[in-house]
Image 1: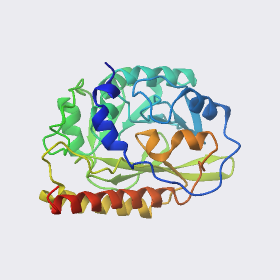
Image 2: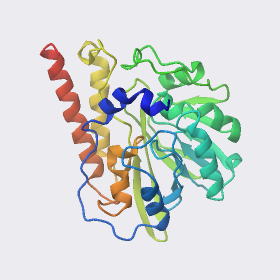
Image 3: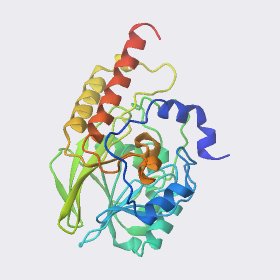
Image 4: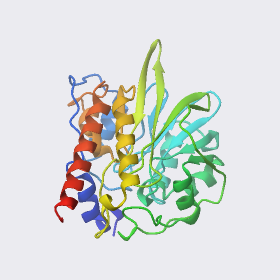
Length: 303
């Protein structure tokens, strides 16, 4: 049974109401690779289903599966990978990196969104293939080293499977100052809430004289195992709101999420919604804030 089918109820809860309407005119000049992915993949697809890689903008490429995002940012001093998918999905990511003409050993840094198996289960496999250092938060680092869900995770009791632990270099971030990886400057944003160690990232991608700000925003969805109450964890809720505010204020031309469907990825690649949208991050943050408010209100009402 596939991971998506095994966790279908959880996936439905994760994505119900998650897709954030993005404004702006439709894009009609999508690259052939973008359309090829959209034609190969469904709006909400299998986590490990292969899809063709493609260039998003500048030197930023999509190398994930149909159902889980992974990004490659090519740099003059080495490449940066963000997220790996599941352990099996990491095989697709490696194949897509090769298909684009890049060598996995040129990946020097691996970043991540949040510490769930569907996004970091392949981290050990990718680190073994590349020799790259993993960069993440202390909370996420502990999960990566153990290969087990973290005890403070709202979904800790949801039955997530273990995954191969990361045994190589993990660098822990303790502040949000900008950092250069492979010659590209990345801004880390601490966005806990969906998990304690969740992160979002932003960077600039350029084509000729034109540059765009890309934001890879974490799920920001307050779902949990049965019995967990966000209202019992006020520090996490406060950090959740702070992270949402950071996304709303981010310089953002292109918003991307760990689950492609959360930003209508397929529609945008088909030109039915705007790929470049200055309101994308604000809309995503507004939806996240509304979901959190509704969750807290439901808990206050005894739900």
